[in-house]
Image (tube, rainbow, N blue to C red; front, side, top):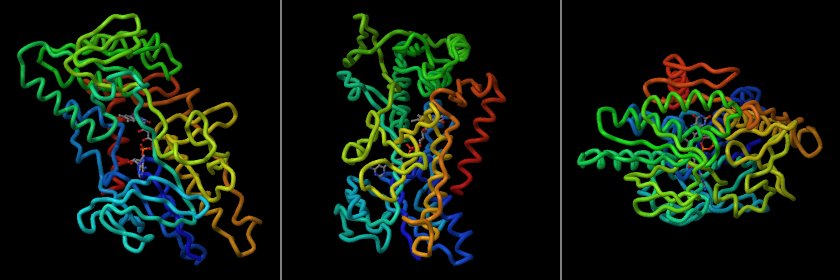
Length: 411
Ligand SMILES: Cc1cc2nc3c(=O)[nH]c(=O)nc-3n(C[C@H](O)[C@H](O)[C@H](O)COP(=O)(O)OP(=O)(O)OC[C@H]3O[C@@H](n4cnc5c(N)ncnc54)[C@H](O)[C@@H]3O)c2cc1C
């Protein structure tokens, strides 16, 4: 039996789903039980290792080193890749609608999928099973001027543009440069550390601004926050907590208490919101995130054979909620793939009523209640937050080892 699985969004979650499906299909294929056709869809042509983006700023890594061609990866695992943005999904007809692409001939366009293939023409791509792994987006909380005037490191493009803007400032060299980083979560902290490395030997002021009373507010450990703040302050970063940005003008950020801070470059790392595609989908949601059942199937009316993983998902079990991090996206990806295979196996061959084997429930590990992370701090140091703290060069080397090992799958 031939089954087509369409994976929408090929970041950490989607790549894991596709890889795991191929692995499982190959294993079962020998027993002629299952023939899986995997179609990967992404609006980007390249996978981006987001956790390393702050290091683009200091020049420790290049875009080429921390990204990888998705069509090559798809070919390697025997899948197909389509480089287009998904704009809607028709759950009744079981089709995914793409925006189409003004692509150069053949660029990222797979053969034989759906109809209406052509320049800039959207198309309907059919699926038997669908996985939504579209991630999250930056939010600016509706703060006037924030989106238009700030730089970001949320994507490779954003990080490279920010680095170019920093280079231009450095080249001017006339006065002390002032960079304000808004948001002192994991990314803001990493960005501040990389900025210190970037400006080594150059007169610069780096402000790290956080609305919460302390940095790293998503981490329950005040000790972690204290030690990281001490480390960054020791490297010259000025940390301002309890400061909520309210407006951004061309050269100043205004805070809720009316105080203002001048900037030469503003970097926004505060907050994420659900991917805009989710707004269009009539599915059950929690604060805009996709609700899934214990086996990672999206919840909602008559929607069938649709799974969701990663940042896009709101998953709770036993009072614990999956965090929005790489570990959860990957683990969910593997379980969703396993569940698709289970659901398919036995369909029409006397399997369970409604098709397939019993699905495997997902158990979150890296939760919002008990988060764990590698946080790089610049100066070739990092902190590992996992059952206590490990600070220093070894933690940084371990983080880089994990990164290299991950990226090897694309070679
Ligand atoms: C700067 C930065 C640093 C981070 N550092 C860490 C860290 O150190 N540790 C950690 O655990 N986590 C970190 N994270 C979070 C981590 O990257 C995410 O939790 C993880 O990427 C989630 O995986 P995902 O597959 O859900 O989404 P993503 O990896 O974001 O992938 C989503 C994919 O969907 C595609 N897509 C979106 N919409 C559409 C559409 N409509 N059509 C087609 N394609 C679409 C996107 O192009 C993207 O490729 C960081 C995030 C950022 C931005």
